[in-house]
Picture 1 (cartoon, rainbow, N blue to C red):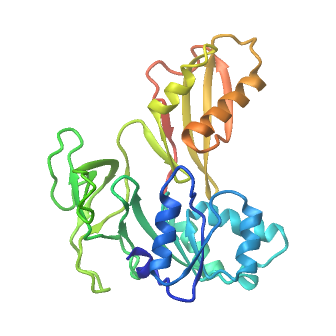
Picture 2 (cartoon, one colour; picture 1 turned 60 degrees about the horizontal axis):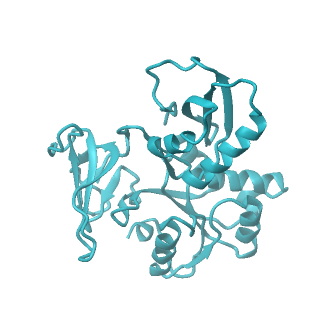
Length: 309
């Protein structure tokens, strides 16, 4: 439904850049692309240069993935000497997994003539919960789910327009007994009339997260997971993850206080980076070591400094 609203149809060749490994996103999007009558090309994440070549050789007309990866693909193509707007055939892109900044949308639509759409998806209830129509004014709620906005402190339902936690109950699958799943995302619901003709209520967009978890380049980084990682390293007294938006990309820095400043920092950084990737399925951009007592005693373990225009 979401991809259909974005204009994917029979005859489209769609590059699916979501992973098919250890995450259902790749399979879910592959099936949805096929349901629209389009051809799904399973390229997965990473391998930017290979993706560029696949897009070009297959004359792909559509893209499914995160906005930051599409920007990386375009940059790679231009570094290889291509003129992306003239040499490639991408006409529409469907994004989820991270927020679509208005500056990125403007770049893709005005500079590259790519029609962009975004959706709000949650893996546990079954995929896309809300999506943009051609009006691109907030996100229509899927009628396959009961979506509530609740007070995070007591779980009580809030009225339209109030900001609270997004809670989802899937009603399209009789075998999936999931009731009132708390996403941890903050948003609100409005009941505006939409010129597109759809009558469902709309989600106003994600305005933040509850607790010590953050989504980076489409993957959740959870405080408890990282804590279990660092518990294996006696050299580390305390740690903090900082997420920032640099250009069109999320960048993540791990800062670790060392009990022993004489340890092999290069070896330790490699080990932490590899274990972090295996647990959180994402690579940290930088690992910094600082002396003990550098981080404030009451500091948060995950700090999100991103600002979305």
